[in-house]
Length: 387
Image (cartoon, rainbow, N blue to C red; front, side, top):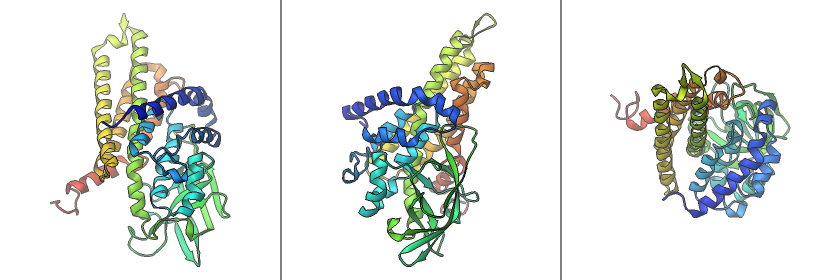
């Protein structure tokens, strides 16, 4: 069984925290297009929420991945997508490789304060010409004695305007594109780091997203995570947790919109009866609830495999693909049943419609997920086993 009484204890604490410290402020943060990351993360760090599956010696709880997955699912109860995503960057996107492969020195400097909530982290992979195509990044970290000198830029960086450090993927050599990259912890206050602008987004409004440039930024080589040239591999491993997190965070968010739509359509009248009484409506909502449960089963299976030490690339990719597709279908259908109110910004379904669209883009677009799966199935042109 994936979850135990210990999971339930942490789950209840997290539910209480979300209800008292996050949801009452979400509307305000959405209007402001930002939330106070340092203030919120410090509260979460003090309660142990930012390091559930991180090493004890660096301030974490030392629990297995199932606890991180449970947290991701509960964060779906936050009444927007931006804040959960920002938390997920801190816990499951910018820090897994650091926790697993980083030296003790670099973990003390960057991981410990991130777990405590003293530092806000961001992950720097995507670039304007290299989003889902990670191998094509152009940012360079040139060797200069005991330092790297970094030049380039990153785009769509969640937490970027508030972050204290960035887990940066950069080219550190001239070899093959899958073996010439390294992950480097770069302080955002370092000379030459320039947060160029905060992006104005369709959804995820409460999450700050930045474009960042690096102009001869000098950092010590000891800030590198693991071995030089292994960054692409480390990032692919890190993507497993990111994609599972992204899928799990959708579950309760989807259920919330289904339930809100049930209540709204039950009370909304048209042609002498409630909208919910139309078979096309209540049948569709039943289908959507079924799809959510199927997605949950896939995610739980992947989590169990990850805890057992198995490679879950296939299952995590499937979960990420399905979560994105389901989010688009579910929110579109529910918005339709809200009618004109669904097209206003004052309803939860319109926010969900905007926020959920990112799931099919961020962390690898749907098309990349399909390419990964086809390659594993041997059906991708040019891959082993394809015709």
